[in-house]
Length: 134
Image (spheres, rainbow, N blue to C red):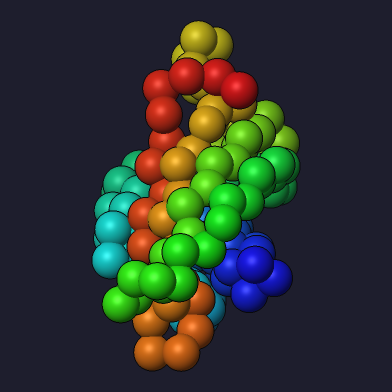
């Protein structure tokens, strides 16, 4: 379980770095994210780049790790997290001005996570935001 936790923490550390820069270049995201998780990050960053935004600060995480299913050909762990983004702020890259977002948006949400062991190390395959608060 410690290796799953380490992979998830690395995934978020790399994501925070990528969102702060507006690119995955120079981050370790590809070390920790594959498949849908990596694709989602790239898609989000492309949208933010088009608008000229980056993110400052960082989210607060409260993962509740599940068991590891190592009877599968590809060992897997599924778990949930309560992601709090109230201190992870979108700003205009050009001047650091905070972007005003809708007040009704979710700032604390449930994320369903799938981690798998690929080529000897754990990676995040999917981190899906639910449209509900935690």
